[in-house]
Amino acid sequence: MSGIQEASVRSIRPYKTSEQYLYAMKEDLAEWLKELYGVDIDVRSFLDVLETGVLLCHHANNITQVARDLNQEYPSLGKKLQLPIYGVTCNDFAQPGTFQARDNVSNFIQWCRKEMDIKEVLMFETEDLVLRKNEKNFVLCLLEVARRASRFGMSAPVLIQMEEDIEDEIREDMNLPPDEALLPRPCMTLHLVSRCSCPVQFSMVKISEGKYRIGDSNTLIFVRILRNHVMVRVGGGWDTLEHYLDKHDPCQCTSLCESISVPSVNFKSLSKTTPRVLHPVLVTTL
Image (cartoon, rainbow, N blue to C red; front, top):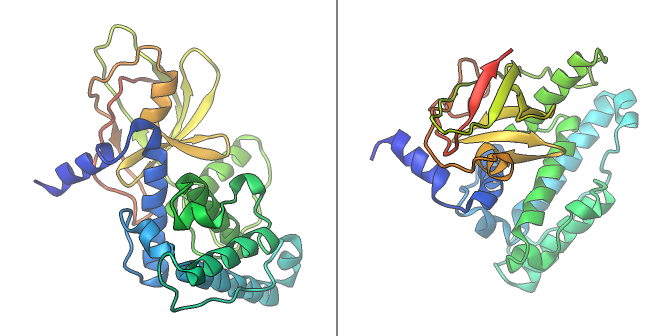
């Protein structure tokens, strides 16, 4: 099986449609942690690697150090941001499922609450990770930590980079001044093209690169490519295009359409292949 075929199968088979966004988030976080810390981790081993809490604690201490460096170099900016002051203690020899592992995870949770001010709706409990009781909350919390740490100059997952790109675009459309940032943000673009022979087509009107008006409403959505996934920015979070259309497409067809081509992408971790979406979408351009 070719690499492209394998990627296509991986992007469709490992999850139910409603779980696609969670799989995409884990995949993004795993590749980010692998690059950040040189650990052997991927989407399949994601929870197994993190369940001892060792990497989480080291990550918390790393963020705290980055925040200290930022405050020292840019004191005026540090005053505007809520920077973590204290790190966490960690048992580096904790084994999966032990009290030591639970202590590590608990220390990370307390650090998220007190030092990073993560809201309760995005928090998780120790057993959510150790016993896999609530994988979603753990993933959302880790992503939120990454989102906040990116403002301190910390390397961010691709999803966070795409969020920043979208926020800059919204500010530009509203003629607002750019948000303060330490590092310049690269611009990402994509072009969505789709053909469908379905008698009732769900329309997506292209407003600009990566921005579409959907259906008969005036709702605007932002679409980005994350490796093998076509992601839609929804409110303060993300969804996959396929799951988003499952919820909004009145036709509910599953015919295979031509989907994505990426003429210009500046993030090396984005897929250069052409993902396929199992949904009919009629795309027009204003």
